[in-house]
Image (cartoon, rainbow, N blue to C red; front, side, top):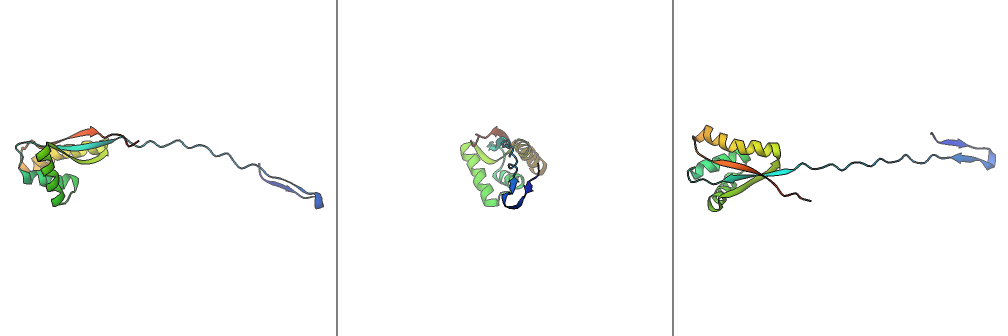
Amino acid sequence: MPKEDTEEGNGGSSVIEAPPKIEKRERTEHPKMYHVILLNDLVTPFFVVTEVIMEVFGFSKDEAIRKMLTAHKTGKCLMGTFTRDIADSKALQVSEVCVRKHGPYPLGAVVEEAPSAN
């Protein structure tokens, strides 16, 4: 209903409509996130692992070497946290890039659900 103003001399009156009700918005859920973890193996040379990390994850050479050494020393290394489809794609790319560029080395990565940030 539009605002109606009525004036009748000094004794005029106005009718003002209440503001519209604000609808509650539903809270947007964030997608689940997943870690991509590079696994160490005893066969793939260090330089191959470093090059694959640089290509697939976009790390600098220095950071890729640090990640490769972490995987070598501890058996695994977190490469990043992504939505499920990107994490799956990155894990698959590790093996594919390794084989395409360097031969049949067993370099691999796994995807694990990341703890929720709530």
